[in-house]
Every structure is written in C-alpha cells, then in structure tokens.
View (cartoon, rainbow, N blue to C red):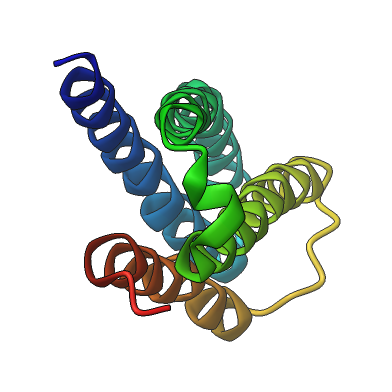
Length: 141
C-alpha cells in the first residue's frame, strides 16, 4: 500500500513539474520577441514566480521516485530501462537549472538567443516525457 501512495504522489509531482517545464520556455519565446520595457518586466516576474513555484515539485518528484527505487533495489542492478530513465531525469534537472540561468539572463537583459531557439528548446521536455513514460511502463530493456 505504501508503494502505491508513493507512486501516486510521484506522478502528481511529476505532472506539476512538467507543467512548469512546458510553460517556462513558452514565456521565453514571448520574452525574446518583446521589445518594450513593460512587457519585459511583466515576463520577468512571471518567469521568476513560475520557476520558484515548480522547483519544489522537481525535488519532490525526485524524492518520491528515489523512495520507490529504494523499495525496488533490483532496478539498480538489473533494469537497463531504469538506468536510461535515470539518465533522462538527470538531463531534465540540467534543463530545469538551465531554465533558471536563462531567466536570470532575461532579467539582466542579456538574452542572446532568438525566439526560434526557445521554440525548439521548448520541445525538449516533451521528448523526454515520451521516453520516460515509455521506459517506465513498457520497460523495454
């Protein structure tokens, strides 16, 4: 029963985290396209608040995911899919923290990338989500 509660909470926190990972780069797209100071200030506030709101969900996802993994230590030894999933999760945390770096760059008006970059950048967590869900459900390796 404990495992099912952990899984439920893990999924809830992952959904909350991904909502932010999907929306924050969309704000960057609009920010890269904006030219006026009022829009810049409004987007900086929105980006900062969103990032601060979703960051705890990232760590709660990790906490409950590791707790479930600890209850299934065989995953670490024999499950190739689990190792690939962990690698993708590490990449997602790098993506998350890079988003924090980008929002600080926008706040200092040091953005050097175009809205096209952010449109492509925005799709990366979608690809990771597809891969992670397939790995966790299908367990192909």
